[in-house]
Length: 395
View (cartoon, rainbow, N blue to C red):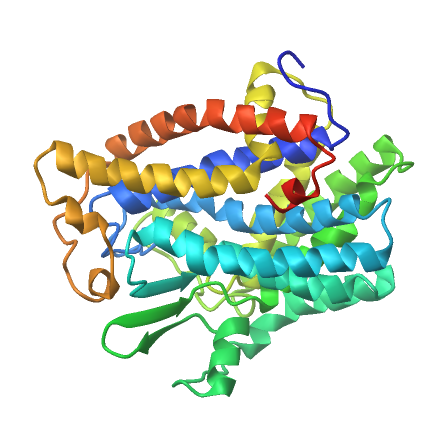
């Protein structure tokens, strides 16, 4: 690969991770730049358009693929380490990511030094899942697969359980299975946006999946598994969704035309991720990994850079997108303080008239990704040349 330093990492996994990181930036640019992004759900069929719906839908793949591959990376990282050492690493990195989410990411998301709105998102979820994975890896592999599948396929049975208030049992339920916005006094609010129970199952399955990439596992056999897993998972989605009884809190229905009916059919719940959400996102992932097994091109080289420094890219892209939105307001002579977001931003119509067309969103997305590429490549090169520095594994 021209311009890419050789690495022992699995190339296809890094390319896929890079792809979802690039797609993820589209969603976050939409959050900060699209008209109505602060008021309307882009998957609400009553208010959305097909272009907006599919712009949001394609980004649904990012969180599940990234969390699944985090488990896979843990499996690969632990190939030449004892379970104890891997467990310690997962536990400590999990704690670090929880700190990053609460302190660093919440400032970068909102630019509010008062931390009026704490949103516990994907980095929080990954951190907590890592802590649980630190314990789960000590189970026999077959038992871990059974437990993980039980979580993924069975957690929707808990959808009817609802809690309210600030009691400890309620907060624990928000953390594990109920997305909730929790006011803390008059000026602060915490959003439990990524309930972690299903994500624990996804990451643990990713860990089990990683054994297909361990040294000595035959490539041709792995490719057969990838095709089989992909087709089975997608078929399960289609069958369960057609039955329309279990697997998601939002049943599909016939709409005004075939396109909107398709949108209803694939419009599945992310917060928390339903069984059908997981199936429709992870299923195609297996097929993409199959396709990427032996591909080398300028495009894959480009994606590889982001896939090898995902945490660095994630932190940097949030800052750049938010700063770009603030500077755009200032350059146009508008109120740039709209980009200093607090509880009021999310509980009033303060942002009702803010935003730009979807074309602007796509333009800004391309510019942000292009801007991040040289920074990411430079950091990737630094990491590859300084593998002996243990702290780099936490970044």
